[in-house]
Structure formats: structure tokens, C-alpha cells
Image (tube, rainbow, N blue to C red; front, top):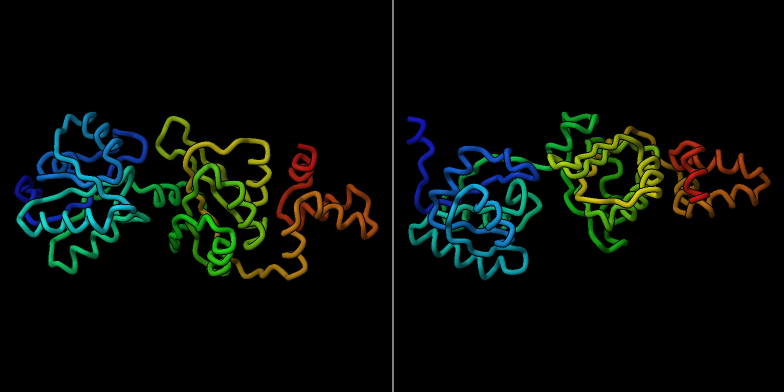
Length: 287
């Protein structure tokens, strides 16, 4: 009965979850489907060849990614309608989640093609589970725009969302993203930075946005990140404070100094505005 239930069917697209770092996380059902479908559509065939080789699977691979999804998607749909079966995989995790596979699922729905999911690892949910933040209600925001203006608008749209927020971010953009989150959300907002989940260098940092900014002033971001941000708790940042935390740390302190405060008092006030400890801000100023 079990074998029959998991039989690979023709004219079906299988969304197959693959490991996000640890090969041991692949499921038996995923291996069965990858072994038995007629062909596999992959985001990066070079990465997928390595995965399939490690699993001892030899199968036809076709490229399907953001830049060829229209043309390649049409060919995949044609083959499915002709009676073949296909497994869709992404570089890591669940296809169709912040991924061009979303478009393929829509195409299949429009064409009357069956879509079946083979659950697997998901970086967003994995990070949420270890974040230490509320998990009952959450919103997945995926990658923020590379354009600063649009990125700020995206953050503004969710700044008063009471749900836990989940973002993906690349290491080279992490510092800028954290700074923008500090401006929009306030530096006192809780955040969990989950790096290289399931991999050898896995790291979970639970802190505030201000604390994260300070932490990465001293360290180079490495690896892929999932940022889990605490939801809005009813405290709106006033316009004066918002203007102050949009300044650089040094400019923020100098603003208070110009108003007559001693430098140490200025640092203390600026740190409070930015949701940081005085020592964290002091380290940034003297880096």
C-alpha cells in the first residue's frame, strides 16, 4: 500500500524539497521521486548535478530559473501535457518559495496539470523555529529590494505588523539592510540572525537590531542569512527620534554634544535612541 501511495505518476509536476546545507536531511520519498521521474527541472544544473551524484541518481536535467522561466517553462509544460513526469528543485530548500518555481505552479494550474509536493527543509521556517521569537503568527517577506528607496518602502509597509517577520539576505547586503531596519523599525526591535542553517558554521544570534548593527561593525558577514524580526508591539517611533537614528552614529552623538551634553552623556542618549548599550555604541565610534 505504501509503495502504491508513493508511486510516481505521469503528467505530474513534483515540487521536491532538497537540503539547505546538510545532505542527510534529504527524505526517502524525495530520493524515490528524483530517481523515478522522467526528467528534473533545476534552478542551477551545476549544483543539482552534485546533489544527484551524491545520491547516486542519473537523470536528465533541464535548466529552469528566473531568467529563462518563460521559455523553459513552456517546454516543461509541453512535456508534462505529453505524458511525462517532472521533479522541480531549487538550489536549496523548497521550490516555489521566493523562487521562480512559483510561476511554474501557476502555469500547471492553468493547464490542468497535477502538482504534488514532496516536503523538505525550508530555511525560513527552520530559522523561525530557533529564533526565540513568537511563532504563532508570522509573515514571510523574502528578499528585500536592492534599491534603497524601494527597500525602505517595503520595510515601511510592514513596520507596524504585529506578526514575526522573516527576511532572506545575502552577506554583502546585510549591514545596509540592518541599518535600514534600524531607521524604519527602531534599533530596539528584537531580531534573530540565523546564518548557514544546518551547515558546519551554523550560527544563531539573538539580539536587537541595534545590537546586530554593532556586532557586524566588528565582524565581516559571511554566509546566507535568515533575519527573523520581532513584530510591532505598539510603540511608534516619534519623528524626532526617527530623524536622529537616520544619522550616522558619530553624527548622532555630535548632535547631542552641540546641544550642550558632555560626550559621554551624548553617547548614552544616542545609544538609548538606537536601542543599543552605551558600550556597543562606544565600540562602533572607536572602530
